[in-house]
Length: 191
Image 1 (cartoon, one colour):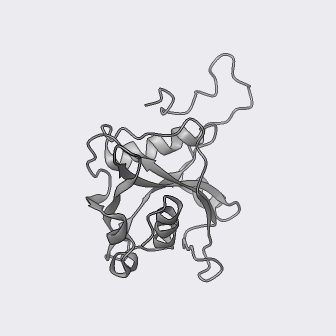
Image 2 (cartoon, one colour):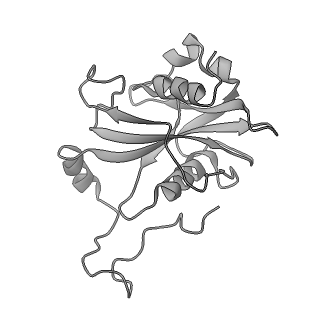
């Protein structure tokens, strides 16, 4: 666990540049930014690995979408201004899977893919009606006790083969099923 997965630094803290703005945007400010600038995100595919490092289970969140349908989802979220990628990964995993998830972020995190979400469907396999977002996607082993939090109803642990089945893929929105399949190919577990 890193000790920097906390609130962003106070812009008035001694030793920081005077021009460092706050990392938090109001809902109105965020809406304006989303209409003008691509937003940086991280997608995390939580996995359990065996003693040899092979992926044996994939964690998918069950959520209710804004239109009222049940969907499966990856751990995902924005990267804040002045936040390291590894800290954003830890923050979002702890937010969705609980503080005891114990994510194992590698010393040098490298995404397995970059997903570019557009508000217009069909430009790429990824769609987010709210914004143009660029997401760095990671496979993240978790070693602790994971419990769904925030707006998640359940956390289901599936084998990589089950997670890649068409029925599960149909439950995922916005192209996250594509990210999941890419993750399983990356770790050598695509059926």
